[in-house]
Image 1: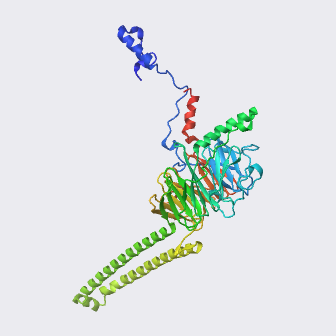
Image 2: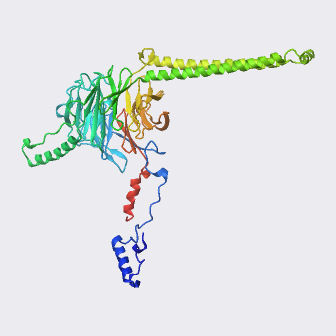
Length: 541
């Protein structure tokens, strides 16, 4: 800073010029004086680039911080996970909702007991005030993790999959039904929620066996009004006020959908929505993916992953066949040139003289080489035939394990995700174990196969260049896109992975398993900049 601002750097008494003395005093008065000391201990060491806080996808080290059993019993798996600054929201495969405390300092989940907030909520099967649906959970559904969503603030949860064709809004704080909607003509098989907190906008999308997708506006302002109303009602109840003065809660979801998307030809199995990309995606029982505009409901693309894959494979096969023909033609030309050279040298006097002396002729010398070339070509052809036979065998295997759509193998798509950054669409079939990646323009970019694993959940990274997936092999994999190369593996789970959750900064990852355990993964605590900055207060800053 300016020299005048440092303590003891200016001796006012030695300045004889009145104007200069006044100017220096004015400078000191306006700016103030630089502190003589900032810290009582040495300043913390500067962090290295590798130590700076980043995401689980980019970090070199991701640490496992343990598991906690958070369902009623080991027979009940985790169907849905959500997280806020203070709470972890767990919905089990038995349709029970629990709220537990998140311990930031320990990076662990503290299971709540004997609490009115954390008591089990039997969705569709409970009695009296705990009952949410008018019917039981439908037996049509096998993927219950597609039937739940929770708002980012943890105030409300949405659930579907009931036999009465409804979906419901559940008040988490009050542990009671807030709203029920009956608009679909068949069981609601899946739903997806996306929120833009900055723009105060939220959209809920539901898919059903009636082949329709419905888009619903979530009243974000009503959430805050209801929160304030709860506080006022508690005050009235404490004062013993008349029940007529209690505030009636506002509906969270508009009773009528903003759009009805009915381009599907079969039952809808999974949906996803991204307000950032402006895209709604749904997958059907016939293996077809439909892409819509999230604002207007306009139909963008109809994607057929299995057909597109077959077309790509056929194109690759034709390209390979053309290259083989070109190579074969080049080999024939080379062999013909060699034969022409042999004919030109044959019949000379020197050759007769050599042959007459009992020596080996040129044709005899080339004969073994030609035989070796023939054998090599046969081996090469045999290898190519084996490779083609292997590819054909794989295709036949696909046909055996999946339903047929014409002559092209197809399967039921069970997971679909939309990237917030690029608008890429990712879909997966548990039936064929195929995973497909599409661009926002509807072009198939790449595909892969989960081999022996069957994925139950897949999540995009915030940047859209990675995915994290987990399934029956009890392994959580982080894969790079579009190559689908595995970059990280986490093998701590003992039971199949049912659902995955990442916080908004991607520094924490929660994994729910089939036996009710929730595993916690995080960047190492020393990597958190906040924990380093907090130590400055201890240094007297």
